[in-house]
Image 1 (cartoon, helix red, strand yellow):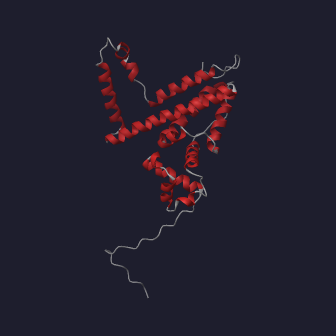
Image 2: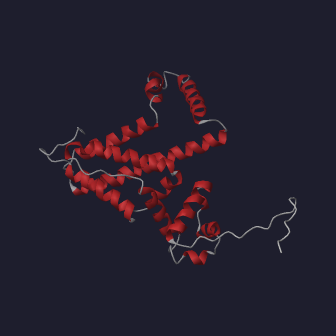
Image 3: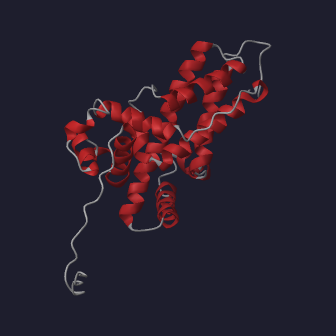
Length: 246
């Protein structure tokens, strides 16, 4: 006997969603979805467990705690960075290219830029990037200690710049305007304010306003990378100068 269909105005019973099997990857996926939606401040083992429809205790079989979860999240972002094989004659260009990649990855996953500021690279993807960049620096003649310290300072700069961009994006969203309109309005306000300062008190600001105001995000970011690359290039022993950092 066929079952009588329910009238169309009656609420249909909900089928229970199939729970995704727990794994470390599932935990990281849920955490990434959470911070992309609500920000890094929302991240906790309890909230990730809620995302997965389970209790916090079940997560600890896959992740030891929030600290490890942050490391795994940063490592997930590092998977998107491609490091080329070393070319000694253009090591400086290769470092700039990888730095710009990392910057754009962090700019996409803005909350991870902040997380990376207190995370030492230990995951397989972060270590792959570190190993590859060290290989490029060594091939260019940079000694081990300056190379290691350079990478530390470089990624601090990348994360800081990307996180500042994330803070600006929050201001753009709060304004209800599109990015171009908001930035154009801010630039005009700053230009008007700086231009109206007393020239006798602020001769350098008012006299070089165009230089202070020009240059976009990528352009200024690469300027900073170039300063760091030129600095580490001074450690290359005489006769080993490759690339065009100098």
